[in-house]
Image 1: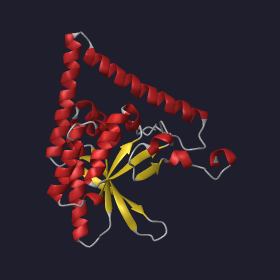
Image 2 (image 1 turned 30 degrees about the vertical axis):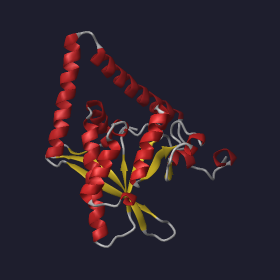
Image 3 (image 1 turned 135 degrees about the vertical axis):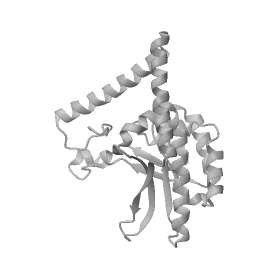
Image 4 (image 1 turned 60 degrees about the vertical axis):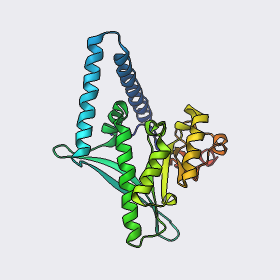
Length: 248
C-alpha cells in the first residue's frame, strides 16, 4: 500500500490494513479534488501556480522520454500445461539517472494529470510492437504482446487510426497485439466505449479486460463488449478454495 497498490487487499487482512487502504484511497481522492478545485479556482494567482507546476512536471516527463529514461519491461504469460510463453505484457518503467527506478505509482498519475500519458502510451505501444516484431523474426512465432491503454488514451478521437498507423510502421500483424482496458472505462460511457472497441476490433487486434473484480464487476456488461480475454484480479479469486463463501 505504501507504493500505491491500495486498490485491493489480499485475504486474510487485518482491520488496520483495511482502515489503511481506505484512508490511503481517500487521501488520493482528496488530493485530486484539491488539485481540480485549485485549477478551477477564481483566484488567478493560485490557478497560475497550479498550472505552472503541472507544466514543470510535464516538461520533466517529456525530457525523460527524449533522454530515453523510460524503459519497457515484458511480463510473460505462461501456459501452465505446456510451460511455454504465450504472450507478454508491456510495462513502462522510469529509470531516473539520479533517483534510480521510479515507481509507476509516482509518475503515472502525473502523466495522466498533464496529458503526457497520451504521448507516453503511444511510445510504449510503438516500442512493444517493434520488440514483438524482433522476437518474431528471431523465430518466436505465435506470441502476442499486451499493452495497457489509459483512460485518456482510450478517449482520444483518433485512437484506432494511430493504432493502425503504428502497426503499419512496425510491420506487426494486428492479431499479435492485445490492448488492455480497465473495467472502469466500460461504465463511464458505454455507447462510446462500444464504438471505440468495435473500431479496434475491426483492425484485427485483440481486446482484454484487465482487473476484473476490483470495481464495477458485472457479468451482464461482458455480453455487450467484444472482449477476447477476461483477466480476473487475484483479489477476486484469492482463497477461493477456502470455505463455501469464497467458493461461491
